[in-house]
Length: 352
Image (cartoon, rainbow, N blue to C red; front, side, top):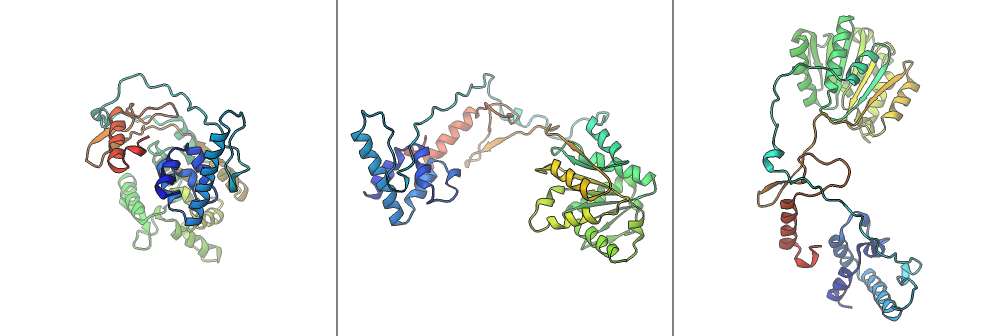
């Protein structure tokens, strides 16, 4: 069988059958679409391509001989024990009836919103109140208002004459928080400790990278006295999803383990995958129970656009905001541009 004949035969197969042929031969084949699967199968070593051709040739022969039989065809060779399932019909997706959104609507409302009175959400009030006696994890989407909880908790700690340490995984983020907190609490009350900067190191509010705090806790565990830890009342660990980082996650773990028992812990993140397990673990290793604040309601909805290589921008979906769940429908102009791009790059054979 020539490569062109094999290509044509592969193209005539359903995607599920191509995945059957790729299993054991192509890693991560389940992530590929039909075009990439065909390309990957054709790029296999000669002996593997021959086995694929043999499987397909045997299948075609069985189908031609047993077209009147009720028995399902089987792949030959390595796949002889696997019955090829009948193609299942695609689930019916009800189209969205409202008219498609426009590019102008996609960008509507972007910018600085008009000033309005601020009213904290119930979960923000709950988090701040819980910090008086409990450790707290706040796992909510980006833009929900985690920083408000950190600021109000810091304000309460300052009023109680306690030291606050705010940690972040990046020096750039630490510098940003220094500017933000200095504007809120005054530059004389805020200091920073990173590998590059050491300003006002005994201020009541200290901003540092998590590694710096871990080192301070190491020194305290070895007997070195640090008055900043003696008066420590609140430790804020921003971007706490770094606990899962293969290289730096141990820093967050050790910081939590060595954190003084008199200090409250506040963990902030928008992307902790297992916040319930994390709260349970902290409750087990620290004398103070850990309270979890967790929801997935976005205060700021997400929108999506498609930028064609020609520079044309269109909404990705018919709706302005990214639809939650299914059914969803692509924007008609986006579908047209997708088809045009496939026609130009892949040819008419692989359009569908």
